[in-house]
Image 1: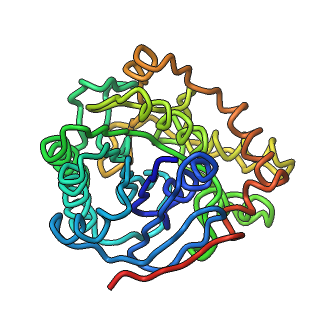
Image 2: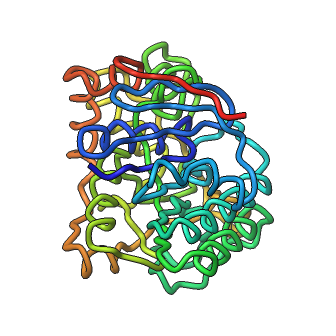
Length: 310
């Protein structure tokens, strides 16, 4: 069984990838902040280092695949994260490590590198957001591709259940606000093509086996804003729907990281992997099922081991 190292298992995407891969890979999850318990995975706390020290630390594990999730936060999730410059630098060091270890490297990136006026963005689209955050992420993408020949950069906007110990994510906070009736409104300006994180995991597994490289968009099949998403989520979980928000005509294009139009077209994944972007209704049904079929419990613990790297 191949070994996969998931750097950033404390992120929503990292945790869901770990839970999905645990039955087909030996998964080592690395968190820079605290030990995260995912059933079937070995987790360690490691703040990172240079490519040389990282390669020395992890060479004995003989990883076949390194997945870096530190840049994967959805543009819809306003939870604070570590300084982006440090996260981007660490991504490049892990790409260099993958090159030294002759292993495949996947960088899970974000759709927030884009903005309007285009509604959908292909892999070669250049309508980039000019915020400092988007610039940092794009530079990290480019440097990772240069650092490791076997790099796949996946841009996406993923949602799902958060791992225990990391606080409430976008889904948990949205459901809580809907259930308590405390939601004033949800943004109806920004638009994206979100997809379930566990669905994303299945696609990147196929991309790993097919040895896909370069930049690839993997997204859901529907363009939607957070307000519409909240209404669909409320219907799925049978909780009160949010009140609609009336928005006037925008005179200027929205400015800011992930604040505008970030919808993706998954052209490369369609042609190379036969990927069909899932409809939101299907994804929300699977999200609801995960709260009942034991999947969500896997993000909260189970059989596990912990370790610490100095």
